[in-house]
Amino acid sequence: MHPSGDDDAVDGALQDPADTLDESDRVLTREEREDLVEADSESVEVTFATQDYPVDALVRRVGSEAILIPRFGHSDRRIETAGFQRGFVWTRGQMDKFVESLLLGYPVPGIFLVKQADGRLLVLDGQQRLLTLAAFYKGVHRTAEFKLKNVSDRFKNLLYETLPPDLRRRLDDSYMQATIVAHDGSSQSAEAIYKIFERLNSGGTQLTPHEIRVALVAGDIVDLLSRLNRNQDWRDLFGSTSARLRDQELILRILALFADADSYKRPLKTFLNSFAIAHRNDAEISLGANAKLFEGAAALLNAGPGRRALRGLGSKQLNATQVNAAQAEAVFVGLMRTLASGKEPTPDAVSQQLDALLQNSQFATSTQSGTADLEAVRTRLREAAKEFAS
Image (cartoon, rainbow, N blue to C red; front, side):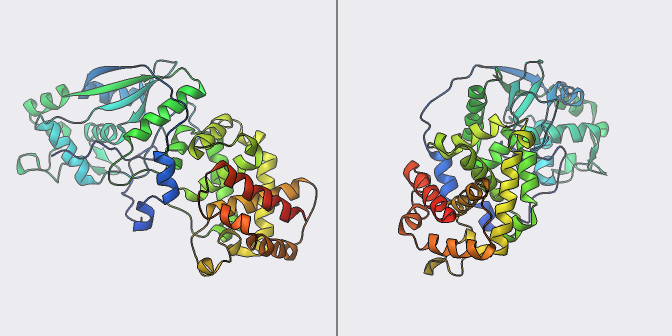
């Protein structure tokens, strides 16, 4: 049998499987599940066509970059439209089984491509299949020969160049169906493509909304989030780097709500998508001042209340290690607004203000349930701003 049609992503090249993920990393949080399934207020249509490609033609197009496999997250000047990447890659067993499926003439899943204005095709879903084929045809996987191992005896230890002529022809002439989506470059079209991939997002390790978003808006905004995520005060406050990019998403939430809270409406994923797309290519310039305020707030919180600023003081959270994203975003936004007004509170003052804020019943309610609701967002931002401005 061939491996699942749900491809896992790569960072511009094949990588080792993400075996370091623990169960909490693999399972979506309640908020992430709600964000994925929440209905959108508006729907956008796209146009698409289907085309069958022989395998050898697909490999040639990948090699010539007529078909582009985007590099995860960061600026890629070849790419004009949205690209998607998964965070986990196939094992060698999955790769071998996929090649074996084609050699046996088994049907395999199709791929999804986005047609750019320059005519090149960007891979929306199907990266692992295409990269597996490219590696097998080249005869090298990372630094080792790509010999088939996890296959039936008749195929064991075969390279592409050592395939018997009949098997090589069968592989070359195998067809994979491509669904090609048209993209006109607009933010509405990009959002529609996001929704397409969101609906493809199922299987073993389901992607978080932000893992999809990072690939959708590969560019300066992702570089800015990555830079701020390395800030030492932030790392002290948040804790270990999140394998699922939850720390980077929280930074995006803070920046977006600080800059544009008046535009917030559910679903949260669409609000963050729109903000990220708007700053995709100029984040360091357009958000540079806000980034400095973020770093200033992180320094004050780390020197003052420390990790509890993101975790709460209620009896149920006294020894909690998990970050409360709703509380964290409100605390940061409130303190950033204070710094933006020219005030310079001391770490001790910030600690006292946080203690008072966490005893505020309205703030507590707005950070514990229905946290994506418009009124909850407005309430916690208002109460945090009032307290830190006092």
